Length: 556
Image 1 (tube, rainbow, N blue to C red):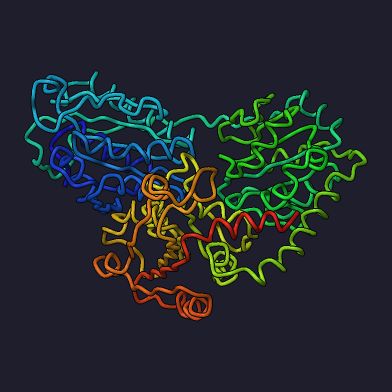
Image 2 (image 1 turned 90 degrees about the horizontal axis):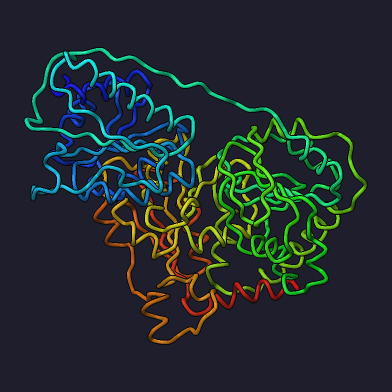
């Protein structure tokens, strides 16, 4: 069956022609023509998610895994405002997301009708393309049909080619629920031309050949980007030091994976840290998590910075010289083969190795705390999983540990918000062929607890919830602690647990509050797959910051 409304038929037919199968639908009335068209066509995978903020993040998680556009559909009015956090995340994380918003006809806006707001250009600051379709009343409206065809194709092409969100606003006049057996029109696909540049500027090549200290920073990357042979080539140059973040999905024995562990012991020692200063910085990937590397490279006035890859180039260190828009793998293969004599890589790899040896002593005597939980968690994880990390403390603690090379790691680091981490992980679990484990803090989890309110969570989905009774990251940041103002407005102290939420949403619940119980729980946690699992790990609120800060002091 198809909706009777012709411009709704155009969307259904073009989405099918372009292979956009996954549609996350926020229930409503004004979007009924599209809901009918998608849900009654077996080509589409349709998901009903009531909470719009969660729905958009679920779609984000699906698109993140599939590396293909996913549509999210809502009714008119404030519904689409709740999509905005996910739209912004998709914009900065460069994830293809297509927002379909139903609307009243233009003459019904601002006359006092219910569920009407000014929906055109509502995501203007965080969208790659947005448009409003024409209302098509008859098949004789060839101009209107052609206009919509062009706009829908352009939206799809933009989302695919530029890796990000687009918005199609679709006005509908009643009646909304009428159906027809077959579509009343045909559609034409207007494909895009994939312009893949492969040119590395001569200015970069010249600087690369001259630089004795080259720093390559790998941040958020959807795997696979590099294989071992690429990394062998890159690290075979002794003047090249490669640092990776946890979400880079890069593991190699000549890559420094713990940026903060390397920098923290010397960040206040000007003579030592100045020796790390590179002549040339190359960034590859999305947003950089480590504040320490950003502050350091800004503080010592990075000389020259190039960004490599199709992802957006940011002037993070205020010295961006150029954006080399080639695939990172191609960039490595085109690098000059002549190496400069340098001890830059070996010296700092040795520093890093020394810190790793030294920290084992600290870990052995470390009390039960957030840091202890992370130290125990990562070795306990099974091979071959998708690892989703919550924001704030979670992703920062994870930066201190080497990732398992069989894992693929994701986190919402576009806007770095906590508002959709759970929903994104759920969406990823819905789309992934591998088991998904989600590690999160308590505030992020409870804030997005409606992410569990759906019927699509796979039975092998796991959540490790680290509950320290508040926003622990604020205890690490500068400021007066343990005052009424701090407890209420920054740390946000609470006594909540996830037990009742798990019972309500059908997750198996278990809790632990000390090391022996945690290790015992881990033995069965990953193997139980009769229903989704949540392990709530309680840690002492007031010592976590001290344990972490003492860790960095101990390494000096």
